[in-house]
Length: 635
Image (cartoon, rainbow, N blue to C red):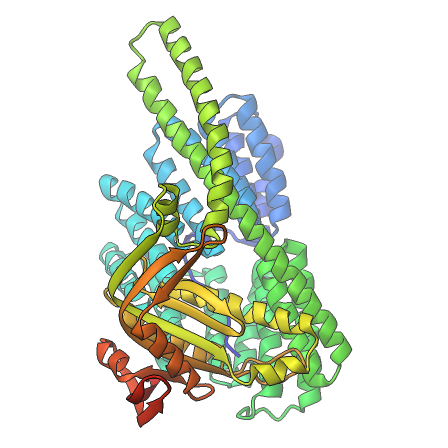
C-alpha cells in the first residue's frame, strides 16, 4: 500500500529555530493582543496570530486574518492590507479551498505591485505557485516560482533562492521527473551548505529522500530521512520531525513491514497531537489505516495480527481520518480515505457498507473535479486581473507628467474600452473552453484562425493503445451504470498519467484508450515518455479491481514512426492520426499479453533510456506479416 509522502517546502517549514510552537506561541500572542493599540504593530500581531493558526486551526486563522485586514483597511496602510490578504489566503490554502486562496493571494500581489515592493511580489509569487502546485497545475506553479526566483537572483538573496529551488524540485518530483527534481534539490543543498543553514540542508535531505522513496530505493530514502531527522532534532523543529518520522513510516509501509510502519506513524501522530496540527493528524490517521489494510491484504506481511482484527482497525482509522478531513475541508483526502474504506469493508465481507463508501468516494471525487473546473476558470480570471493591473500601472507612470484632465479622460476612455474588451473576451472564452475540451490547444488556435482542413505530417511520434482484457465478457454480466462508472474511473487515471508524461490523448474507442507523444508539438524523447507512461499504467493499474472485486487486466501496445495528424468533421470535430505506426501500435495491443507492455522492434530501437526486454520472437501480426516484438519492463 503506497504511503503518502509529504514534501518539506516553504509551506511546511515556517517554524523558525527557537520559535514557540502551537498553543504556547498562540497563548503568548493572545496575551499581547489586548495591550496593542490600533496601529501597524497590531496589524502585524494579528497577521502573526492568523499565520500561526493556519497549520493548527485554519478556521481560527481566518478569524484573525479578517481582523488583520479590517484594521489595515481602517488605518489605510496598504502594505498591511497586502499582509492581511496574504494570511487569509494561507488559511484558505490550508483548508484546500484553492479558489479562495488564489483570490486573496492575487489581491496581495496586486498591492505589492502597486507599491513596487519586490520582496512582497516574490513572496506572493511563491504563495500562488504553492496553490497551483497543490492543484496539480505544474506549469502555472513553475511560472510563478521562476518569477520569484528571478527577483531573488536580482537581489542576491541566496537563502530564498535555495528555498524556491526546493519548491521547483517538488514540482518535478510530483511529475515523476526525478532526475530534474534531484538537480534542483542538489542546487539548493549546495547553496544551504555554503550558507551554513542547517535547516535548509535538512529540508533538502528530506526531499531527496522523497525522490528515492518514490523510486522504490528504500535504503537510500531511509539514509536521507535519518540524516534530516538528526538535524531537525538538534534544531528542535517538531513540525518537520513529525513529517520526517511519518515519511520513514511510509518507507516501511511500502516495504510491507507494517509493524515498523505503525511504530513510526504513531510516533509522528503523537507529535502532531502535541502541536494540534489537524492536517498532519488527518493524514496520519489515513496512513495508519492503510498500514492495517496492508496487513490484511498483503500475503507477504509477517504481522501475526488476525485478518479481521486488522480490517476492523483499518476501518476505524479511515472513519476517523474522514471525520478529521471534513472538519478541515480537505476534499482530496476525504475521497481518498473513502476509497480505502470501501476496500477494507469489501475485504471484511460487508458489501453493503463497501458500496455506500464507494458511492461517497465517487461523490467526493466529483466534488473535487467540479471544484478544480471552477478553479481553472477562476484562475484565468484572476490572472487576467493581474495582467490588467500591470497595464494600468504602466499607463499611470507614463501619464504622470500630463495634465490632470487629460489623464482622467484617458483613463475613463481606457476603462470603457477595457470593459468592452472584457465582455467580448468573456464570450470568446466560453467557446474556447468548449473547443479545448476536445482538441489540443495548438490545433484549437489554428481552427480559430479559420484554418480548415488541418493536416500535418510528423516524422517522429509514439503511439500507445491500452485495452481492457476480456471487457466484452465482463460488461455483459454487469449493470451498464457500473460499467460506465468503472470506465470513467480508468480513463480518468489514464488522462492523469498522459498529462504527467507529456502525452496527448487522442480518443477512446469502447474500452480502448489511445494517446500519442510528439504531436502536435515535436518531442525529442517521445518514445521514452510513452514507455514511461506505459510502465506507469502497468505499475499503478496492476492490481486494479472492479467494485465487486473482479481483477481487471490491461493489454498495452506501443509503436513509433512517421504519422499524419489532422482535424476531420465540420460539426463534431475530432483530431485523429493515420499511418503505419498507428496500425502497428493497435496490433501490438491486440496481440499482446494481459498485464504486459508489448512493443515493436522499431519502438525498442528508438528508446534512449535503460529498460529490460523479453523477446517474443517473430509473431504473425494481422495485416503486417511476421514481426519481431518485445515485452517491455522497467530496468
